[in-house]
Image (cartoon, rainbow, N blue to C red; front, side, top):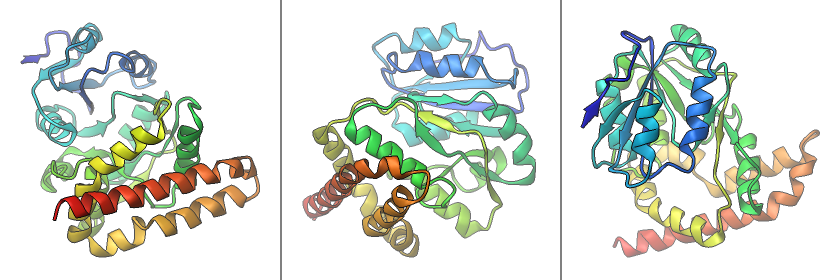
Length: 278
């Protein structure tokens, strides 16, 4: 189902693409942040995976171009890119918020680049593990590690084939590696995305990492050098520890045990998933 009857923008420069699946809990905050953007005209494309809650109602009521189709996140993003009318694509998730200048910055800064990395931080503190993950995101800020482009020239995105749907959870990092291999111009935005990760338990985090295990294996085979540089839990922990011990960030030291827990669970889930695939 394609419903664009509510869309007022005829030919936007920027198309915002959001994959959704029963996202009614977090979607209102995303839509509110979009309505507060200083860039007044943009297209909102939502690719919904047959939600059974109020997700489709909220999107239609907000004036989104709604496509209902059973698909995972990467395939949904690729479909949105194909349907987008804008020259600039911005991919966000339904549990994210945009700082008010983000879309305006994407529209202007992309003129000097082919893709833009949009850094993330937590939307709300959450539990201990969530706070630890938040410190990790800040440690990666503009490091080039574990950050991925979310804003693209449409022509460049399509020329690279978009996201690889089989890389669940790592499709954005894979595309980042391919961007670098292709030698395209990649920059950063100053504005950030705020990620609402909720209050994740150890069990939930482990289950999530196990889902990503197959993608880890495929990613390491496709980009062995990139994987060694940027997927190593040891190297990532060194970066995080250095961040926490640096001046101005020592308040995050108490989160280091949580980060050790996350990295240990990640290694365990990766080994477990790889063994089960044999």
